[in-house]
Every structure is written in structure tokens, then in C-alpha cells.
Amino acid sequence: MTETLARTRPVILTVDDDPGISRAVARDLRRRYGQDNRIVRAESAVQALEALRELTLRGEQVAVLLADYRMPDMTGVEFLEQAMDVFPSARRVLLTAYADTGAAIDAINLVDLDHYLLKPWDPPEEKLYPVVDGLLEAWRGSDRGPVTETRIVGHRWSARSHEVRDFLARNQVSYRWYLADEPEGRRLLDAAGADGLTLPVIVTPGGEALIAPTDAELATRVGLPTTPSTDFYDVIVIGGGPAGLGAAVYAASEGLRTVLVERTATGGQAGQSSRIENYLGFPDGVSGSQLTDRARRQASRFGAELLTTREAVGLSSKGSARAVRFSDGSELHAHAIILATGVSYRQLGAPGLGELTSRGVFYGSALTEAPDCADQDVYVVGGANSAGQAAVYFARTARSVTILLRGRTLTSSMSHYLSEQISRTANIEVLPCTEVVAAHGNGHLERLELRHTPSGAVRAVDSSWLFVFIGATPRTDWLDGVVARDAAGFVLAGPDLAVDGGRPAGWDLDREPYHLETSLPGVFVAGDARADSMKRVASAVGDGAMAVALVHRYLERR
Image (cartoon, rainbow, N blue to C red; front, side, top):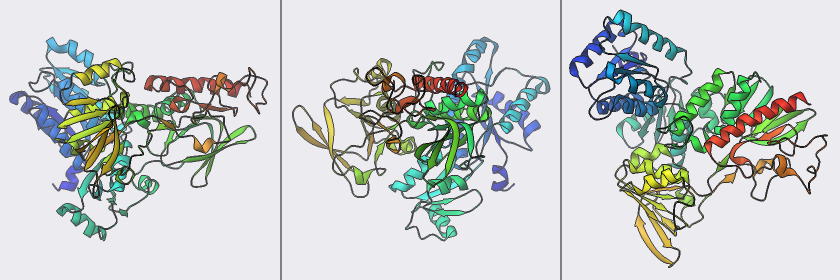
């Protein structure tokens, strides 16, 4: 069987540390599913995770994961939790003894478990095959995104190569990464007729070579939706972070014709988080990518359209309708609009940082770079939860992680659970009252200059990795003169619009603005872009849900 044909068959992976049971599971699975599926067997969780990583690199799809609960290096629940980050759409089964059924039931919420099987399962025709049949059918009918073998050829320190990898990863598109100066990378460049001077080069699943494409071109070629199905909706949601996804889920589930438009990828800053541990319903935490993927699939299931690489640049009234203009000149119209554009991290202004951005200096967690940080010295700037979550994540594999803190302690800006976790992590160091004053490097970051602000002392440290999480700048410049904003650019809404106890200037309705309604009737704001918002995932999702309720009220009283 050729390698290409093997890749077209979805994988069923089973892991059990008992060799006899492992062989028996694989034997029963091959007997029933071996013709249409590839059966992969592992005898340890570590071996299974390595197999999953190899399958990812080869662009293969994993349909079902079956893991034994009791394994010496990690439990089946812990394995499935890590496997979810690699193949979030794979169906998950826990193999348990009768004494472990309590743990299996607990795992239903922890790792979104699909089923648990009691050992032994003889006869398989009655106890194993019906379960796997159902899981395969559910997997085939799920929204898994395009089945791709997208290949990227780039340079390690190419800013655009990093941006392309980040774009695909955040949009749940699997890809394989090749360095341009390695044999396989050079082979692909030759096949594409590329000289390697302009990078990255992307080879699509259909064999089309794209040389340094824009995000919009890339999205179209790998099958991401970018074009709306119509030009009028009940509600347009602008921004795909937690607030926007929450709004899309609630609006579509209540029968509103809903489209969500996002300029890069759904998830926002939360989607880049390595671990969110204080979100309701996930007692052991959830990664931002997992939460985003579930919300995205949920919105799609209810009928919402989710479009990417659509940058909103204008907002206006068209009679009773509201119109959004995009950077390509096109427009969409709707009865109501929900602004959920979120915020971006502020840029550090120290000399050298600008030219080294995406070449060792990253704004946000840039999880696509995490594998290359293994055994390296990583520096993180910031004292809020996003910085702490990144520091804990990088500390798993980095030699050291140093948090550079403008203030004196983490406790004033970071959740207690997270600051305590950092204090217990041996390879994380916190440097209070410290700032970056310069960055140096030839083509990529090599050295930082740090200043201790009370004493003014400056010292140099060697590092190729700096991740910055400072402050929040709302993405609302395009709304200037259209809706009221505060001095920092955050959108004012509801009671905050009152002027000397009265209605905002230009407000011509015989009612006060609703709680999340902006100074333009029918336009609502949710999440971090709203003035005085909580800047938490849960509150952003709540804003999105509340905005939909207010949209209903607005539509009823038009």
C-alpha cells in the first residue's frame, strides 16, 4: 500500500501498557476496521503521544483514541487531555476496570470523554464494535476542518514564516513545517520552481505552490470560509474572540441569521492561551485552542457562518439597517451589529525590538514557537494572567523562564491560583521592577538589556526568546467618529453614554440606550473592547450572550 493511500485512511489509535491487552485491542479493531482505517498500537502514553505527533506531521487524521485508564507514566485521562491538543476532533474512549468506573465518569467532563468501556469487552460484536461504529460515524459527520497536508517551507527566523504558521495553527489547519536549508525543504522549493529567496512557500493539499501569499489568499486555498452566503443578516458579529463566539452561538441558536467575521482567526487572545484554569466548568483547566474549537463548532452547528480574513474598516447606517465595510471594499448589511473586536497587546518601544518582532520577539504566547524553546532561556514581560499562563507553559520544557515585572509583586495583577503556581515552579524566576531597555541580534534576537528601575542598573542577558504581554489596546480606530469611545479608545455603551444625566449627542430614539448599546442605535459592544469591561473570558462570553438578548429587544421595538 502506498504512503499516499495510507494517509487517506483515518487512524484509530489504542494505547495500553499491558502488551497482551494491547495486542488484543488492536487485533479486534483490525478485524472489523482494518480495511478502511489504519490501526496504530502503542504500549505507553509517551509512545502514543509521539505517534500522534508523527501523524500530525504527516497530515493524517485520527478518528478515535482508546486509552487504558491505569498506565504507569500517565493515566489514560492525562493522555487523552494532552491528545486533545493534537487532535481535538478525535473521539475519546477510556478503557477501565470495574473499580475505575468512578474515574471514567469524572473524565467525561474533564476530557470531554465520548465513552468508557469496561474490560474485558468480549464478545466484541456486542460490546466493542457498536461503540466504535457510533464514534466513527460521529467523527465523519463532525466539523473537522479541511483534511489537509499543507506544507510550509520557510526560514527559522522569517517573520512572515512565523505569521503563516501561527495563522494556520490558530485556524485549526494542520500543516507540516520544513526549513528551507534542509533536504526536504530544498526538494519542495525545487518542485515549486521557487528560488528560496522569497519565503515562505506553501504547498496546498492539491499540490499548488503559493509564494509568500497573503492571509486571504492562503485561507481560500486551504478551504477556510472567507465569503458570506448573502449580503444581509439579522446580526453581524465583528470579532471571533470569546465575546464574539458567545454572541454567535446564542444568536444562531435562537434563530437569527448570523455571520461572524474575523480578521485573523477565531479565539482572540484567549485562543492563544496555553491554559485557562479558572473558567467555569473546567476544574482542571482548558487550553485556549480547545475552548475556541468547541465554541467554533458549536456556533457552526447552530447555523452561524464564520468567516476569516475579513477586516472591518467602516460602519454606517443605511436607513433601518446597519452596514459594515471591509478592507476589500465589500459591504455586509444587517438589522443589528455586535462589536466584539477585542484588544491587542501594546508594543514595547525599546530600541531593537521593532526589527526583531517575530524573529525572537513575540507579542502574545506564540505557541507555535514553543517546541523550539525547549532547553532555552525564555523571558516573559507582563504581570497579568496571560503572562503567567505563558510562563507556566514554557516552563514545562524551557531551561528557565524569567518574568520581567514592572511592579513589585505578581499578586496585584494576577489571579492568586496562578501566582501561587508560579512560586512553586522551580525554573521560573520573577524579576520585579525590571524593564527591557534594548534588544540586539543579527537577523534574530540574541541579547536583551534589562534595567532595574529603582537602582538604574543595566545588565545584558543572552536569549533568543522574548514574549510580551503588556496592557491592552482596543481595535477600534476604524470606529472613530461613528460610535462614542473613551480617551483610550474603548467603546462606551449604555449608562456610560449619559451626558449630564441625559441621552448621548445625536441619539434620536424615545428611549435610553440599552446596557451594551453604543451611541449608534442597533450597534452593540461586547467583551474587552467595551469600556470598563472585566477582561476575563467568562465575562466576555456573558457579554456576548447579553448582547444577543438586547438585539432581540432592539428588533422588537424598531
